[in-house]
Length: 219
Image 1 (spheres, rainbow, N blue to C red):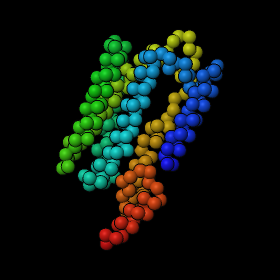
Image 2: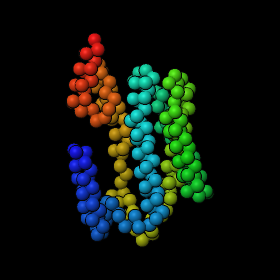
Image 3: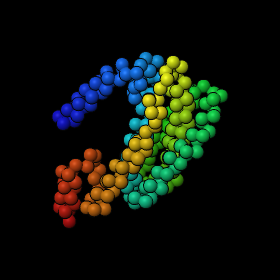
Image 4: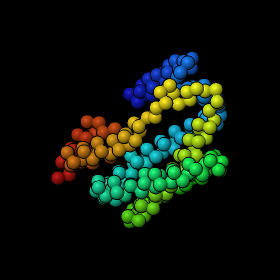
């Protein structure tokens, strides 16, 4: 029930924000752009791709530590190929999108990204470092090859008459990149402080206490 209430409140706030921004002369959320099919498709695809990447970043530490037995430092190093390859491929995909259809390049990137996620989901129980590394690298290659062409398609679909398609401040948010590592960091801190590994989120006090009692009962 509390989750349903949260979703209802979020939907109501979203609808109110949409209505308020629709008639604003310099909106922070230019809702009129969603009437452009190419813009809507690029935006929705970007949201889904970023959500999949975020889920992967949150789930991987549980897989690597709980099932495969790696420590926190080793887990971080095993996940490093993903963002590293994104950083390497994005400057390549950007100029390439100036010469080739962004939709084609973005589709190739998404297919590669999906293949990397599927490979991670099928990771064998006794996976080696190489098994994990090439899978995270494929995920990074796919996402890096998708991101720049999709952004080009997104911004290229904005009508010329729009003076502030990116908002009145011309600002970009950095919150997502900071929050990606927040959940694993908090869960690792709980593990170091209490000696128990919480494998379900959100890590509510009741779940932490239940994990502590379960550990004490096994002694």
